[in-house]
Each structure stands twice: as structure tokens, then as C-alpha cells.
Image 1 (cartoon, rainbow, N blue to C red):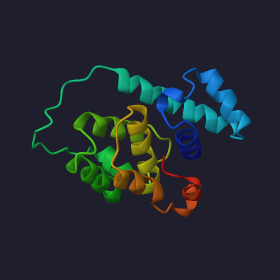
Image 2 (cartoon, one colour):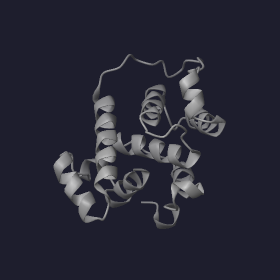
Image 3 (cartoon, rainbow, N blue to C red):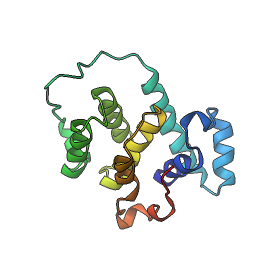
Length: 162
């Protein structure tokens, strides 16, 4: 599924350019050679992202000095590298509290029991892509060039910065 998300980012520079209709997107992904099971998972995941991004939420004070406490389930699925990377992005102003929560929700929606840092970075990328958030070039480079775990596949060789 992560490969499909990377493919969508690479193929559709902007989230608005990506087909919104699940059937149309499924046809395009199938034509690109992805398997039906992965396509279904990716479309479901994207639908969840679109749904969460469009829901009204409680306002977060951007100047708050509060600290996000991770649940036991979040700590079990997101290792210290993922949580540290999220804190880094929020601390340097790349993410606000709402985006952080969207990222956490979408990470928890993955079928894997543990989310590697490379997969987590793709989730961050997709949330920011969906929201059409502007990203610093160095942050974008960090999201795109991290070495992948062997079990994640090697998608970094095909990525380019837009």
C-alpha cells in the first residue's frame, strides 16, 4: 500500500489532480500494475484521510506549550524514531497540532502492527500533500530521501522532488 501512496504523490503533484472517485482511481492504479488488494487498502486509507481532513475539529492553540502524550497503543505501533520525527516536525513549525493528529490517526489506520520510520514519513508526506501544505525544501527532501527498511521495499530510488 505504501508503494501506491508514493506512486500517487509522484504521479499527481497536487492532491486535487488525483482522481477523487474510487472506481476511477482503482482503474488507473490497476493499469499502473498494482494488485487489487493493495489498491483497495490504499483507496480505503485515502478515503479515511480525505474524510478526516474535511471534518471540523476542535481548535488548537498554535502557541500552546502543551505536550502530546502518546497512548500505549500509539507507543506500541510507533517507535521512538517516529514519535521523535513527529515532534521535530511540529517543533520546527512544519506541522500544527491538527496535522499532527491527522498523521497519528492515519498511522494507526495502517494494517501493520508496527510502523517503520520510512512508512511514517510517507504518511506525513501524504497528509501534507492532501492538505496542499507548503513544505520547506529541506523537510521535503528529508521526507523523500530516507533509506527504507528492507521489508518496506526500495521506493526511494524513483522519487524526485517537485
